[in-house]
Image: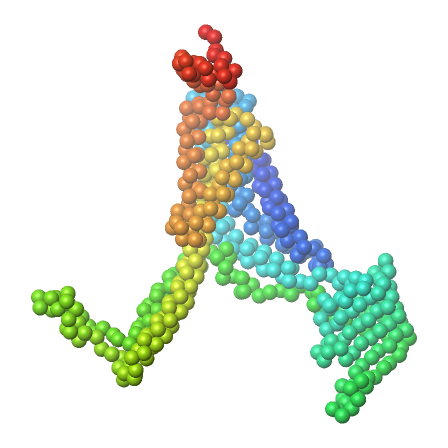
Length: 503
């Protein structure tokens, strides 16, 4: 019987889980398209490029989608069991709610382990591929689009103006082409009465077939004594100008430029990065102490380990014995005039202040990088644990609210997902700004939601009617009766039109 119950629960779980996972991934892909719409489209890159991009970003959204899918599917599964009194029948058979959650507990643990592997192995790879491809698409020029009456300069080496462009997008009227391919200014200009525009060799080259025009070339071989207005003119009835469209091709960027970002690193790589940042941080601190000594004109000799009573007395009175421990480093340069010492001290103090500020900026940058690296290292675990935490909330909460389908469970799931997302974002922000330690910022969301899950589990084990309105109606009636026994409470109830229950 128990095995049949386990199969029933698992069968009810997988369908909403897969569907919710697909819907959440789709929503985040739509968010990507909206955010980068102008950068993604109108570039004639081919369907396969966009399919690759959507595939990579589908993988990137999986760590976010898994907790929400787990929460909603467990809510729907146990809510449906409660709605049709199947959960009540299970309890009446002597099977506890915790035993009924056992198959889902095993599934939640397995999915959490998979999520950890995914965060550590697949996610860095998907981030590297996805964001490098997105960068390549964003830096690719848009498709050739010459407009009427405006100089078009997106073709490297050319500036083109068309007075009229016919609806077929091929026939042009009154065209001017400035050839800058030799980087010698406006020495070469072509003017034509009309033209045909088309591409050849699989859109690798653009052809302007010109009719009834003139080609003007300024004489580049003239001497300094020549007439500066001399130029060669060539009239034609038909001519062709061939331009390369390689500037509109998508050029693949080396992935090595992106792979050092924290989101594109695994656990071992993040640990190695943290150690390197620690060493760099310490080197900057030690280097500052050593370098700062060069800005002082005096230095302290080694101090005695033990002081005699006489030495202690002289030390308290700041006598000559203390002065004997100090030696001048630049004594011969400080005896010229009384103001030279002050000017030199001000200059040294100003230089030391600038050096200290630059060192402080470097230390802050290293500390920020270390916090981000450490935070990403912890998120490899927190994102996986979040799946189990959402099960711990969804399963008992579904048994309490006893509602299946996409109604109330969706609302409750969205509320807890937003709560998790907000706490995670705020914790990350606080950790990056060093307002809390990284461990607190990374784990605060899971800890809070885990405690909420334990609370709901306790309520579910005790058959709590936490979300039933009649329970609160009973409490409210008791409250009315209690305050109605006093004159002031009775006056308040009458003021608001609240009548006491008879009986």
